[in-house]
Length: 217
Picture (cartoon, one colour):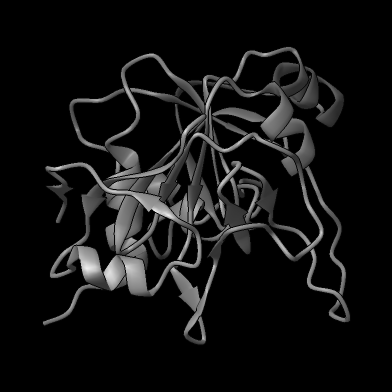
């Protein structure tokens, strides 16, 4: 039975976090990371809407209408959680207190440029806190499905409006883990049942392929 690719991505992204990290999770796949954290890893999840110490998804029947994450999903709080206003929440982000942010994307390119907020001609929801997060967080991880309707999302150069320039450190898809370096995009790991040739065929950008490429499940 094939696993949900979004779950595969979230579980792999969770492995990038370590004890004590203060982490912000974007909407979509990033929000799922909260439910995929290894039991032996304790991180502090910060939500843009003012909770530091937010947890995973609330179980059915245990939803608190006043407690949602940045993706408007009912969540739980962990012991020691506290709440603050939006100005304080963004002061934490802009002040460099976030160790890692995990965000979704529409496109990422060979320079680590990020486009994750607008498709021309489509409804514009606004950039939200992404521009603050990529500027303030110490590490930026992008989680996304590798292609959209068969079209690559990892590009030579982004064609959609940019959120920020040169900010992405790591890209995690259901097919691969790709590190952004000054020399280019390095293929670090392959997803379940995926070959190097599969990744190359689904990626517009040039990839640096080491002699040995790892795997994740």
